[in-house]
Amino acid sequence: MECMSESLVTLRLISMQDAVSNLLKYPKLIFKQGELMIALHRILKLRDLEIFHVEREGTILSYVVIEDTRKPFTEEDKKLDPLCYMEEEDINAILNVFRISLINDEKLSEEDSLFLKSFFSDFVNNTNLTNFIITEYIQEDLYDHDVNIKFFNKILKDIGSNYIIEEFDEMNWIYLSQD
Image (cartoon, rainbow, N blue to C red; front, side, top):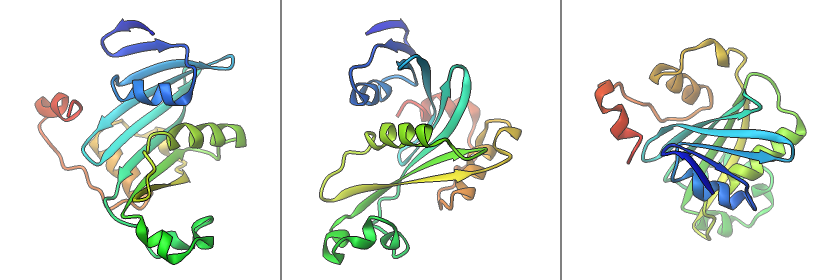
């Protein structure tokens, strides 16, 4: 690992797990996937919510929201593939569900979708009590907004999250991103 600054790390990754563990330490991570340069920017980190944007070759590929619901699967969740094939007892044993949302202005290619899903699935430590759901969303006006609390709340509303980020004094912004 070669550090370029306190907040930027350049890596030649052996596995996705290396990227995940390093992104937890640094707000920005740049690595190569094949011949492409990928940059992950954690633009908001709160206790139960993280928002990232993923760039490929300098262009934003997707926004990603990871929300710790601190709740089990909903009845709607249980109808999703592959949950609909699981035993009710096994589903009900999972007490905490993380929602990973991939938000784009247009449908992702199959390759990009698979890359993002496999990469961000490593962010959740699956146990017999914890699991996650990954959903893709298309928000056509995604890039027509300034990136601020209002923008984050719009994304959260559009993906059906109940999470609302309250306005706060910008002097406290740095502290929120460091907890």
